[in-house]
Amino acid sequence: MKRTARLSIALAGVTAVSLALAGCAGGSTPATEEGGDVTLRFAWWGSDARHTATQAAIDAFEEANPGITVEAEFGDWGGYWDRLATQTAGGNAPDVMQMSDAYLAEYAGRGVLLPLDDRAEIDFSGLDAGGVASGEVDGKLYALQAGANFPAVLANPALFEAAGIEMPDDSTWSWEDYVQVAADLTKAGVGAVGTDSIIGDPVTNAWLLQHGDSLFTADGKVGFDKDGLTGFFELVSELSTSGAAPAASVITEQMVLSPDQWGIATGKSAMGFAWSNLLTTIEGSLGSELDLLRMPTDSKESGLYLRGAMYYAISAGTKHPVESAKLIDFLLNDEAAADELLAERGLPLNTSIREYIADKVSDPEQRLIAFTVDNADALGTAPSVPAVGGGTYDQVIQRGISDVLFGTLSPKEASERVHTELSDLLTAAG
Image (cartoon, rainbow, N blue to C red; front, top):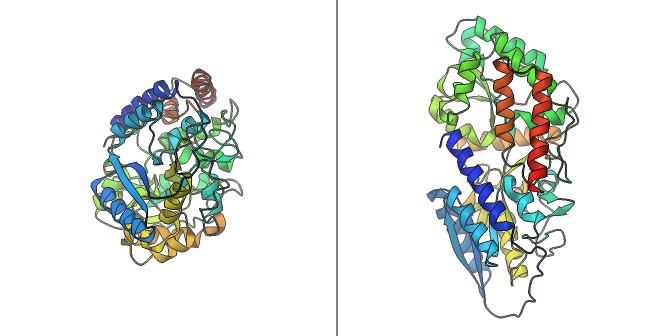
């Protein structure tokens, strides 16, 4: 799906969610368990492969938990959010639901989700602490990562070799090093520019974390001051004007391309930025293996973290909170579930399960798991999920990038405008 289409659907989803949830009464209390056989409803979005794997995991759960039946509700991304908003507004939300970080604060903030902090049915002992924290809103845990990914630099070793340039040491490189290496690759004349440009996620949050900030705070505010993204936009400008990245017109065209059409995926760029779960898609388009590198940094903070690709959450109105929590525990911690789900939703939150499936998944997924093991000491806490109203932040940042690249705004002016637009979005949603 092209990025513009995906964003349009997401925006439509936000609108639908906001309108439908506006009438919801939050903070409902789960009914008391009455015993006997229980039927849960579990909803998710995704591909046919996800449906098949999830149903197989459900079958394994039902076999291990006699008396609990799980009814599956699934569909595509766009339809999922429309249906969920309607069900929630009607007091008929599924017991267990897949949740996106873009809407987690929206649903949690309106009392639609059950806090998970004290659910004794869920074993937290093997879960990655930083990943668990990413499901918190206003200090309470409302969702647990169903799968995680991380921000990374992808590098084409064949183009590095053709240019006669050594692969950088990603444990020590700075953003200045990145610009220089990329400019040298372009100058080598191997038929590719040094790097794709920065066009929003995954770099923005990583860059802010490296500078002690974040896009949003845990209490639902913009997480940087008005000048906080000036350096980020200066970097965007330098990559383009130095020749390290494509010209402005090409960069803006890339904003609407699907990942398999990016420069790093077509051999037109030697490096690029991506969420790790895109490695399989990008390598499939390129037809050869890429190196995974850590983001450059100018501070002691790596900017490396596990972001929830998607989450599991429980409806605050469920009549079966115990059984719903048991289902989530099974999906996260049981090897029988892992045998079916593998890394389809991203890297497992349970680190032991991550190791358990390491030799069962595809080669790119094995390298992703190995990367998290090799760089475990650099993994930090994930930033707060987008605040209520902030789900379309990526569009705001991309407008800032375009204005800087075409000289409409200076980096400082772009930073101030992004801050103002995000603040206005949060105020309007509040």
